[in-house]
Length: 67
Image (tube, rainbow, N blue to C red):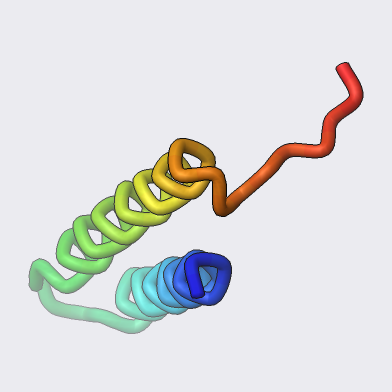
């Protein structure tokens, strides 16, 4: 469940990235849609990092690194 939420948040972050690119290239007005896309992307990334931290803290995510 947690891994699916993390993947969903990463996909939403990528979608926000491309929507911001689209607004940057195609938007002729001086609107705030690019800034809103950046804000959403930062919030989604913060939530993703928090989910990963919670996964390691709770033991649902485990690192198999040998070092």
